[in-house]
Amino acid sequence: QSILPLPTQPVKPGTSTGQAFWPGTAERDHTGKTIDSYSPADGQLIARVHLSTRADYDRVIQTAQAAFAEWRQVPAPRRGDIVRQMGDQFRRYKRDLGTLVSYEMGKSLQEGLGEVQEIIDICDFAVGQSRQLYGLSMHSERPAHRMLEQWHPLGIVGIISAFNFPVAVWSWNAMLAWVCGDVCVWKPSEKTPLTALACQQIIGDVLRNNDVPEGVSCLVTGGRDAGEWLARDPRVALVSATGSTRMGKAVAETVAGRLGKSLLELGGNNAIIVSDHADLDMAIPAIVFGAVGTAGQRCTTTRRLIVQESIYDDVKNRLKNAYAQLRIGNPLDESFHVGPLIDKQAVAAYQATVREIRELGGRFVVEPGVLDGLGFESGCYVRPCIAEAENEWPVVQRETFAPILYLLSYTTLDDAIAQQNGVPQGLSSSIFTLNMREAERFLSMAGSDCGIANVNIGTSGAEIGGAFGGEKETGGGRESGSDAWKAYMRRQTNTINYGTTMPLAQGITFEL
Ligand code: UN1
Image 1 (tube, rainbow, N blue to C red):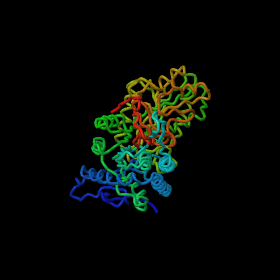
Image 2: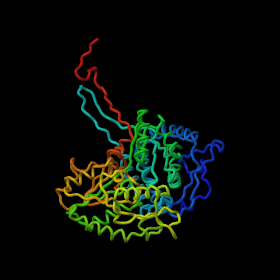
Image 3: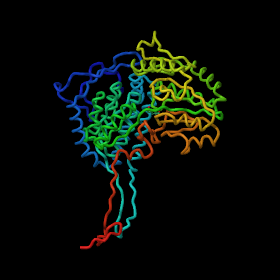
Image 4: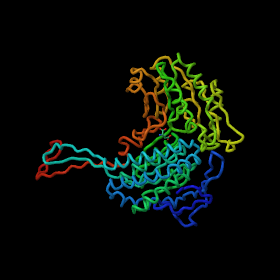
């Protein structure tokens, strides 16, 4: 059974997606506007999806509110069992959904499949978590008193996700939120609406078979407006947003303005330090995958390489050779390493950055370029490139979502760490070294300032078991593993007096 072939007609709100609620408002409520999804792989229009109107949005939130009143009372391990069944569905549809991710978003099929694997992994993790929503107990200072804390569901979780991981990032949030007893309203990127619909379709049977109330899993389609509705809405307890720092700041300000909770996973400017103690046979493939995987459009993409000066030329030559072997082409064809950028706008941003590098005097070790001709008709394919640059250049300080790698050099490890930390973002970082002192210094409180710091592996490809996110302009949020679940619950401290007197804390006496 396959979720493909893809719909060729506009997908209407109200189209059955099981109990996964997508508003079925009357036709007259619709502006008739659609989101057109083009594949960057071949430039084809692959789907038209209706835009949610404000009225649709309000219906979604009301349905979600009603669902929450029921869902929060379902025992957490039972909610976990429902998430387990979802994991089984994603196992069943891994190939189909991975293919659709690859076709709609443009990442290689291997990476599309890897993204679905992340969904399966977080489902498994969430099942275990559903029996481990632990609170602490404390000893009271008062006699015959007991103190404890409990974690309760928060309410509606708004999930704003980006095009580059169109399904996995949703699942990190949704699967944990569901075992925590929350309900989810997902606003996927307007560049990848079809994969979001597919996910709703895939979990629809599970929701229906388990009589899960309609509204536990909701979808709102749209662009910036829909994101703003979520950010402004006091009915939405938590807004979890993944995307650019610009978007994240706007969401954070709006949500903070109503004292709501936000969880932000924003831009990265990730570096690998290559020490003269590195095993270069390990470092080179890690660097290349980190820089060109997902065509440089991961938030964890390796953007800067900080190389010890004595091995600088050697690393540069090895990279040149490695890049010469890269095959660029249709992401669904597994003989290619690198697929297209998401759209022509992204290509324009790549070109503008290349121009800026040249104006600053950056030298290209591997030349950039936009590909045309047979197989590249979509106009979205670019050459991964490497430029010799300086860390303080504005172009190096910002995140360009494209396969552009900056080559920097260092003399001492302190200098390397200062460069690694010397950007506004703080997501992922790594060092290649076989020297234990260097590795430990990099991981110490005086080392990397990022949320993720690795030794002898690249900056991308984090496992779901760890907390995922970063510091500074990356936004500070943590998703997926470790104790990230706590962001989806509210903590309540309880003190119970089982005695016969009424002593006050802090030794205060108050007698009538
Ligand atoms: C993202 O790019 O938003 O660590 C997420 C990684 C993936 C997730 C990236 N597991 O590269």
